[in-house]
Image (cartoon, rainbow, N blue to C red):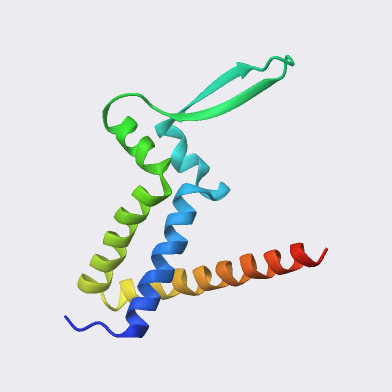
Length: 120
């Protein structure tokens, strides 16, 4: 299997975007919900804080722990992206390209926000 620099950049950006989508984005909150438990604690000031923690046991616990770790999820997402590219190059390639473009846009937006924030 020969991989070009372009292929590598697409895989890099696609895995970046899909990992962030799974771990952080609000749109995937309902997908993550079965693997986490809400824990409420009162602060010394009497305010209630809500923490989301992975389930303790079983497959749901394992998936919850994985989804709470950006690096862990990134490894599995990268494997998925590479296998998709290898075994489904036409359909998978289009899917990966969409994620890569979105990932590139997200990186640019982060850079713009950082630059704007530093000038304010």
